[in-house]
Image 1: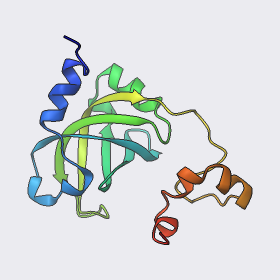
Image 2 (image 1 turned 135 degrees about the vertical axis):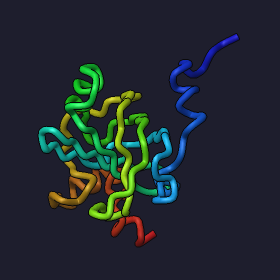
Image 3 (image 1 turned 180 degrees about the horizontal axis):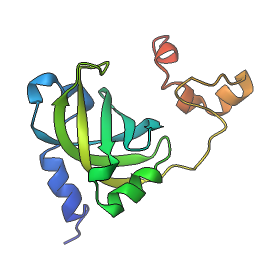
Image 4 (image 1 turned 45 degrees about the vertical axis):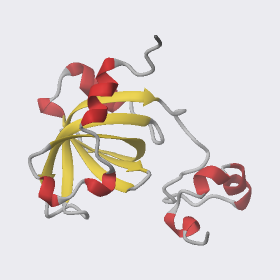
Length: 149
């Protein structure tokens, strides 16, 4: 018999929710999320990761002074578009755009993306048409481009 998933990933899948399912009503509940790193904001003691999955986006918060060393190093080595699994507790946060965030204490990098792309999939840095066409699959992830189709 072939085991397709490691036991830890199988365990995380039991508590898995999608980004759209992370709502204030889940306040205090432990969840697992799988998705792509959309954006990283490192503020020293706090690291914010915007996680994107098929349903939308969710903000993940890592409180660096409360994490194990292995988790800290994994967070510091994250790159945009890496595929990750995070586990944490849902917390209501009025300051957050979505009104809720996940305070994570576990992370598993399932696939690390190349460190630097010529193209910024978030759209914060403008790119020429030749670069946009070369990275068309990433360009289609931007909401304003996706809405055209």
